[in-house]
Length: 329
Image 1 (cartoon, helix red, strand yellow):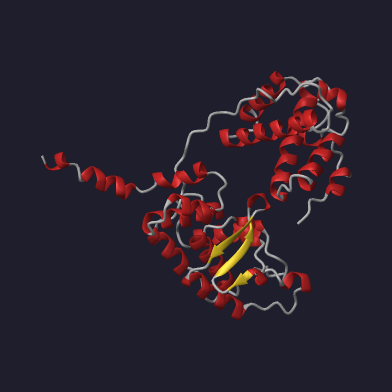
Image 2 (tube, rainbow, N blue to C red):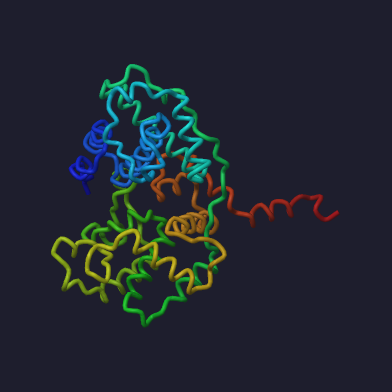
């Protein structure tokens, strides 16, 4: 899927931002989702800078309506490190951004100003070079327990017209640990026996192995799947919506929320990503999967991302404490 740069050019964005996003797509092969995240972050940054530099009167215009197309090379040359920190303070205090969200914005700013300095040659000094990311406290992943996972799958209404599709989607999430974007883009011709080839984060291709539960759910769904009203280009996509178009991420999110609620699992906010956490956690706890294998299964570039799952096995920790020879005194 290509990012529509033409739309950006007609969307009153600064020329340098359009060039940056075009560079990400054509040269860096950055994923559409990442490019869109950069666009959103930088749009907010530019709107803030227009206010911060006194270029717009907020009594006369709403934040979302601030015209940022006027931002040119001279404006960018005058951006300082202190301006970037002021922006991060703004996102924390006025937009209630978490440390994770602010860390993403730091990454966006660093990438953008590196492009302006090294590739576009618009600025002679990079103000983001010394920009530090906010400290992120490591959190344990939120996941369903084994019993909760079984309960969720068993709670689906078999009379629902989308039962086989939804059951297959949940089974894929809970068994394979794939990302939401990966699931939505699965193509039928990429399935070969018990293997599935998907395009993951960063446009990297990887193989997903389908276990017995996945193969059974897939078979049942394909037998029930009716794509007679779908366009030829849509028929190749595995999961279709009720409108016979490729299912989108928002539809899957709403569907999962519905089934989670119907199953009575409302103590935490379970999202597709939480189901990905569930698959990884269950494999690590019950499958004796080593951390390197889990890294490969999840498609993580860095092992440090996968290591969060080494902290979730409370039962092992409990048994370890109980095994202390002093525990019986």
